[in-house]
Picture 1: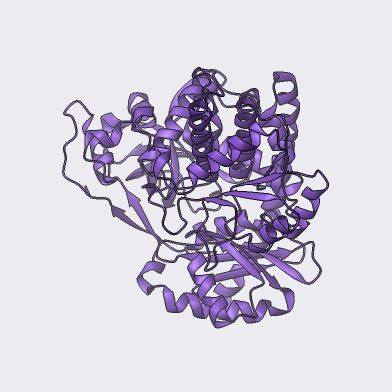
Picture 2: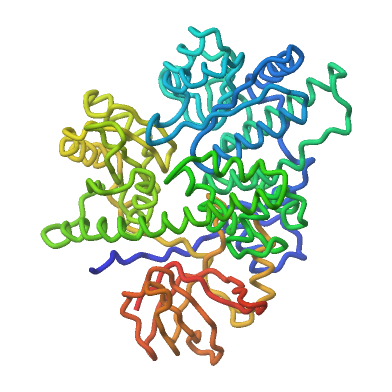
Length: 571
């Protein structure tokens, strides 16, 4: 199958250069390309972290929690079944216990039985344990009916969330969400774990003001959880989030982190002292997410809450095995989905949006399939699978720049109120449910909606490159300097370069990855490179290729060498 060609766009400085002369010219270029021109924007100390005081509702939340601790009330955390939800739940349990709460419990909805958030069904489960206060983490902004059910049962609700609100704001006792109307918190990009970290910081301040706890109780050692959840949830890394991730990574790298994160790094084969944000996103986060995708996220939460290495290692091994199962399931689904898209290409051009479905697919993995198709074909994509509820399909949507996917679904729902059972999400990712009988009508309406919202030129896949680099920059020192110049992530992308190379050697490894030895044109040096999931690419020995790549350090059996991670390859 011929894949869409991509255009390489060389990034240009977006701001005036006020950075120090001591910064390497290449790194300075990278920063300017990302809108970083002032030295203060690179300061990642805790003193630069935004104060919690402008977070709407946080003072009321702190007071409510302090009263609950004082009155020895039962506080129940209601989490979510992804890595952000797991780290948020673990952080809330750890912090509340440290700050004096003695009656604590948590529930994570089973995605296959109850779906997302604080639903009336979850409230029914909660009532069995008779909580006095429910605290949602990484959910709740859309839990209108669930909060009403909790109130009807005499249970107060504190919502902590970061997702975009709908037209109706839930009637929670207290609501903390930087994206709620009227919130002046400067960073709207906090992950769920970031929001609950701020709430716990406000609670600590309230308890100190009441002279309930001593000043030596700290929460900074919870930043390992904040870093993991923030990176895994793919929220934009503005300066505030970069501070949270940087501070968490520093603690992890020095071994000052919980046994569960150490165990997850070990099973993933990552060296703790060199762990990066990329490692959190590509190796640690997926193992944590595997529990929520295939079984029960409580396995992941218990790994993060483990007090000993022995317990953490057992849980991490379970997560590792689940992740291997997830990969096998995803590979088969990916093959099926690619075949479905190939049918479009046989008879016509690709539609403006892709919707794929198979009755044998696993609903916990459709998001990964949608993401891979979106990356491969540069189209907004929704992948559907049967849900646990008869006649209902669960869908996971991924978008491309230029289309706010949640707004697109909102517009579709307004035009065709009978097609969508429920939906929610962000600009680039969303979840939804539809009746199986409505699938064809939904696909037509979704394409019509996207056609209305999406400019045609955005369908051209563009790779944003930091340009070409000099021969001397192909070095371990440069790779290390770039790694240390992060943390890199969403909307603060890891530096990507491009250039033309001569292929000196090619071979397929792991059945689907292309291992190469490349020589930059006009230079005799030979550099190792790997292109993941690219075994079918028509790349030939002694042929010339255009590659977009990242500088990386490959670690294998105690040896380290420079390696190019290839994001795009064109023969």
